[in-house]
Length: 166
Image 1 (cartoon, one colour):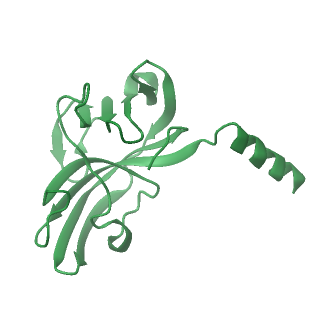
Image 2 (image 1 turned 30 degrees about the horizontal axis):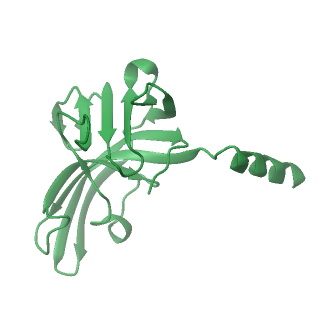
């Protein structure tokens, strides 16, 4: 018991590594009010649990949309190659995944296949380590009040990092 308490205290003092998933989500609201001004969005989401369900996940994730340019103040997700392969993976292969969340956490990071899926910030510093994991498929028809929310996609990466997530 004392050893586990010491290990926990040491981890807390050194900045605990956070585990999170980056998934690809296509979200389509068939009816109901607009979500963040859009009825349809697709791109990257940061989640703690890659197994989506309607009660927890329908309309609750900010989607960092697909774009060809995430430089400077342009937010979203850029993939190389940027080929849409359809459901369930949508983007494959994932040689480079660059996500810029602007002033929101976690900020601007890139995951590189040729660096063993290291997550790197704009200064070239390694900010985390990710593992390619496409095993969790999202295929849900959700109903919330008058809204019909269709969610499709899959997990992309499991990551360990000390970057902050909101």
